[in-house]
Image: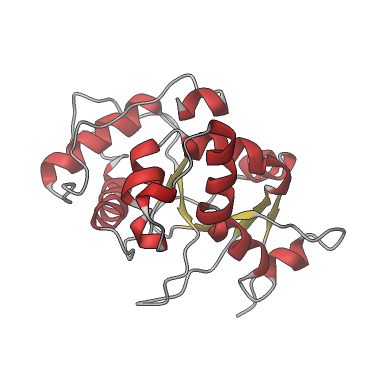
Length: 215
């Protein structure tokens, strides 16, 4: 349902039960074959340090599989694609063992409604499981579809607003002509390849900005 909101035609949903993902050799091989079958230019994933066990395991699995994607004798039944992917970590606020540092930011202020509608498709997550975490009683969760969209905007899109204001004003400085109210932020993983000039230009063409870091 969320894929339809975004117009995504091809996707895969793992059969691994929620909260049970582990960074095992079996899962690494499974992920390798999946990535090779899609042959993406870019992978977006979690950093290995994260609050959720599934997120951490995902980050480790991608990290472990990144180099092996180009090794033909690893999972030989899945051919190595011509293009190996750049790996981007999604933004987060965790500081240990190292703070997230954005390399690429994207102003998504005008897409709030679409993002909220897609998020609302995950009913068990947003309207059951995560509700007590926000200090909200289950009986106070709205039933009306439009009210649920407003509920999602209020309680579950705060991290996008945080990114728009955070990272030492990196996002605000990237868009001097306007102040984004919502943003996505990504860090290039050292375990994948650097994006090519063409790929950087494609990401810029959708409104993204590259952050220049000084050392």
